Length: 262
Ligand SMILES: Nc1ncnc2c1ncn2[C@@H]1O[C@H](COP(=O)(O)OP(=O)(O)OP(=O)(O)O)[C@@H](O)[C@H]1O
Image (cartoon, rainbow, N blue to C red):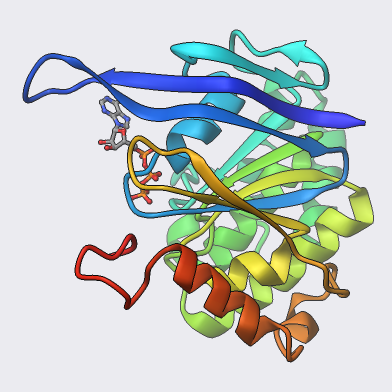
């Protein structure tokens, strides 16, 4: 079953310098099946975040259509949860209250929502920190809390915009492991943006490679490797190097003066 579909999607923005409409992405078509994890990679400014914003209904496409679970997206969609590079935790709420926020908005009673929050905090290795405030946690721990908060609303689709890019390399690998296990266990569908090529390979079933602005999909690569639920082990497979090399070539990294990734 198809969970997310982009049909000939384009998006233009008014260029603040010229006042004219300028395309950010054009002619984007792809679909993601239920339970699939797909990563988008591409040069800075090619429109990756713009795609996620359209997937969640925060931006309307200028042309084409976006569908989630067969319904055309015309406004923010409940089935979709967003996770960003910034943890966006509320400083005045404890970690458990931050994780429970989505459930509170949905009208779930206090004891039920705290039960869900505490179970997710345990799974995300934050047991014992439930009553802490965000400033009392490290960056990695805050991002774990943000992951728990995203999972708490039990979204069908997770849209993730460089969620781990601010973390150190080792913390990042551990969080990738937690995310991958959680996605696999719960059969979630995810669209993931990253500049980290190995992260994309380690986490995904499929990769979409974009061109420079106006971004369009120039290549689709099926990651035909085992261990999608275990990126720590997948990273060690010998196929990772050649796949990374292929992506570097597509993005022209180190090949030309005007390389696509800076
Ligand atoms: N609200 C907006 N108004 C005007 N221009 C915008 C707006 N949002 C994005 N853009 C422009 O659209 C282009 C794509 O932006 P977007 O943030 O989607 O790129 P990206 O691929 O996610 O970049 P990065 O990898 O650097 O995060 C950029 O040139 C950006 O300046």
